[in-house]
Length: 217
Image (cartoon, rainbow, N blue to C red):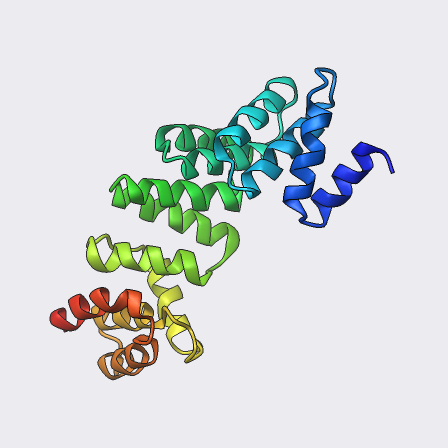
């Protein structure tokens, strides 16, 4: 196998440290294909080498634009705490692909971290339209609704209410859904909340949140 073939094989099979070692030799050639340069940057991202990932993915994009690689660039900036740059790159992705799920999710999270809660909730609604509901994003979105008093649209209220009747007892964030039902007056919602909260209480890192919500109830 050539070095390029070895690199691609390691990359495609998630052997990122190996791919990073092989890729370093490939990208040393200024004539290296921009797609390979970008893939090398992605490998570095997965290796936790985010500053290097930004450098190499940016170099790739300067020569050949790529929406998937720009998503990784946005995430690398986010990992470095460079929220403005992360927003900029996520915006560029959404301008090219308005329903890009990864970019919408990242944008909503960054806006949340910047305490722009109404904007974050609005972007989450766009994300749900594009991707459907998923527990991690739903948990953050519900947290905005609960603690920041940002109210969802009627459509999102309907989604939450529907989930309350189908969610599995093992879902660690189901207490959030149940509490939303409390807010909107679902019949039997308080008992449902307490049941789910008891199941999820084993997640010790969430104890402070439970205490806060229990005080409200």
